[in-house]
Length: 376
Image (cartoon, rainbow, N blue to C red; front, side, top):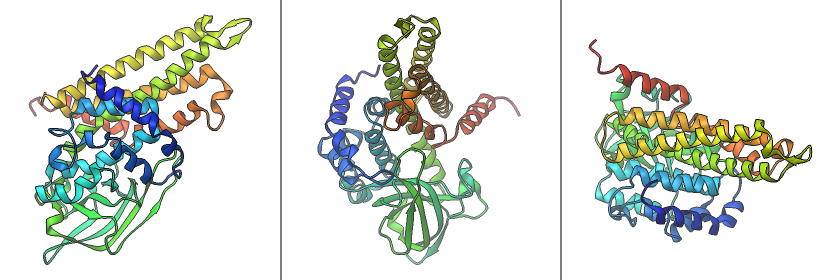
């Protein structure tokens, strides 16, 4: 699909190698041993450019990011989560950071020696990023940050937050600035949140946290553009990750249908089952093609990148939910048992339809783009 079979093979092999470390982690909290192992095995560095302490000649391509996330989604959702959240938290600095910021903050992240988090969502600003309320007020040689971020992956355990705050009140998306905030900053506190699927996520509160000016990312009031650059890069790969999860579910359903017998014959011989598997496979292949088309459009600087990224995330996440649900139906009650692969995937696949923009927001992005070139 991508021209990077070596990357796919390496990602799969590393995922299997670190599986015991992934399994030993505490549910709902950052698995530092896993992140460190992904650095030591060389997979994390392959997502980062050499200028930021990684092993790539340049920034990660959207296609390569999709290859890694699809492969890991198929092999291990724990490993996929760990590497995806780390990259998502670090890439605002990769895209907009100075050389000094890259050396200080990103190099340890690329090596797996520190943990990153992207902090955008707030209690009153989820899908509407322009409604951010967390304040960044000038204070001498820096800013004081005050407010709350919620549903932040890797919080409250992250060592580095790339955080988006309001620098100009009443300016909507034009009044947001990005900052680098260390996890041990004075007057920063946080708590973990439990979700239906084990996922390191939490809430952080900033009570006048001081951030020096050299920890500001890019220009004042230009943070929203940076956030959109990052999300346009990562949205197709969200689709890739769930395509991988759905492929694991489809593979399990095919194996089960070939061996499970009912009324004296394998259930694959019942049209209700075989045609359902055909529908699952067809939709999944369509999702995969849409994901990689969006990734390739991003990499070549094509047109309508935001629309294509939104389409990829929307269709892939909705399709993956369907495929995994159908795979459970093929298996029957045994797939509902705690610890079964499909029980795990059923819980894990639900969140991607919400994070990095809900399905409804993806439809809004697509619709707006369809009409934007028409005369007003």
